[in-house]
Image 1 (cartoon, helix red, strand yellow):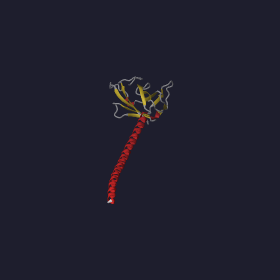
Image 2 (cartoon, one colour):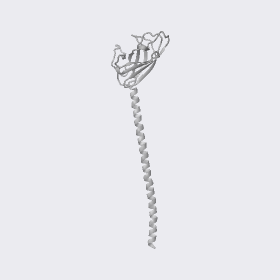
Image 3 (cartoon, helix red, strand yellow):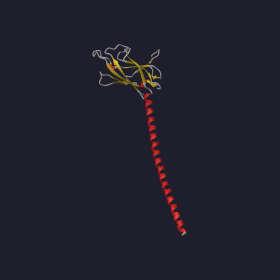
Image 4 (cartoon, one colour):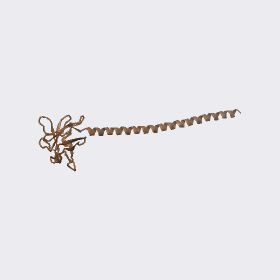
Length: 194
């Protein structure tokens, strides 16, 4: 009889052990699920951080080297040229004058007029100091005058109407500046256009 009682007690203890093993399995499963969820969250956070950093660098590159236009006048030597008074945007590095390209889009032309760089329709960049000499590099906070050949976007007195000419200034590896010029039917040298 005595042995039967001990066997029954051992069986009851075995049931408690089975419950403990089940709880341990559930606990391990919860740890695995939490680890997988943590890995997904960490991976998502890293991807978002990389995307934010890439977007920030792209934005900084677009703003670095951008020109700020203060005024545009018709040319003082030829009324069909445009003299753009500008400076680099804050935080920009120095840029080479040969990296400036322009586009003129006017209603008189079907195709835009393009030029700049070191080509035949290159812009001329003058430092606005006492000498007004052409320069090769634009430094930050240096006011400059950029002379753009106007070409076919010149005013037409026969039309007796104003032209809205769109000017885009592109800096190679930098940003783009846009300005709309209102060209009157007759333009004198030095006429303000914006």
